[in-house]
Length: 37
View (spheres, rainbow, N blue to C red):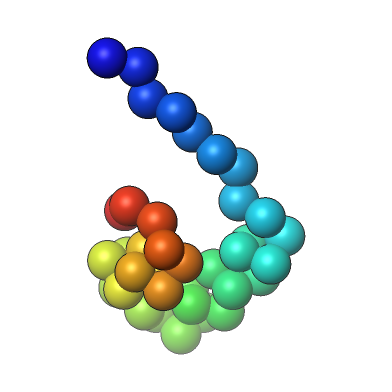
């Protein structure tokens, strides 16, 4: 069983940066980005 990975877009990276700065939990970050944690 192989996994398929996709890279984050620049917009996703920027959103992630703001979420990390606000100390949002990882599960919530994944939910907001529509990704699996």
